[in-house]
View 1: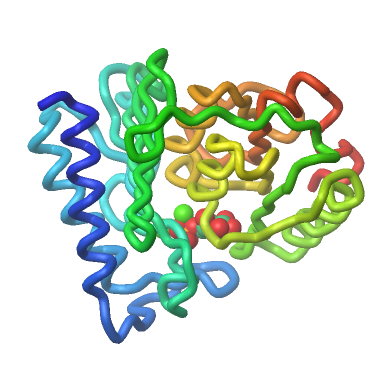
View 2 (view 1 turned 180 degrees about the horizontal axis):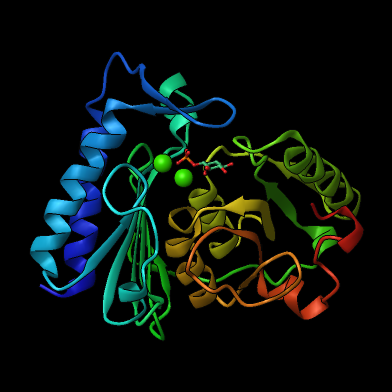
Length: 264
Ligand code: IPD
Ligand code: CA
Ligand code: CA
């Protein structure tokens, strides 16, 4: 079985754990505003680390819960799995959808594979560098529509100091004036899949972690979109970054980055 297929299988297994969850309560509150962790975040991560280590024993791991959270010098060469076991934990706790599992494989520090699975709608998004992006076996491409004809989704940077989330809302309001409307899904990885599959035209959020965006970045790029920081710089894939992912239509049109004076 090819590598990508085996990673998808691991993502499906993670989804089974998510769907089996009952009585979901916070088991921990991380620092910052309302940053909850449930026992399932840890369970899914443990499951994925074991499965993925079996698939590619030489790979290192950067994963959200426990283990190695920090990008180290050694992750710049060879293979590194970057995992967000459950992206959208607040949704997960409250029974709101989506929540997804997100797995990226970096090769020499750059995205090589991305797999994002929404178990509740059985939607498997995936991409391999240079080989296109797919949803459940069908090729996906980002939208050709301009910003004025697109939906935009945003992340609220919920865990950070109020200035950061406040600026997200101000930037969101600017996009609202230039697009059809603005949405907030509760999962950054899923938001990136929406751009890749042509549902939305643009997604932005200040200060996302590597595990929130690494898999989605691979999928967006393979779907003809572009992902950068708020200033338009290429991502370094070594840690936190502001993120703007835009469809091919919006990239072609240009002028879509957040106004610099609004960036915190
Ligand atoms: C969060 C989600 C959310 C985004 C936050 C992320 P988590 O991840 O992706 O949409 O706004 O910035 O941290 O904590 O649910 O894995
Ligand atoms: Ca996340
Ligand atoms: Ca998470």
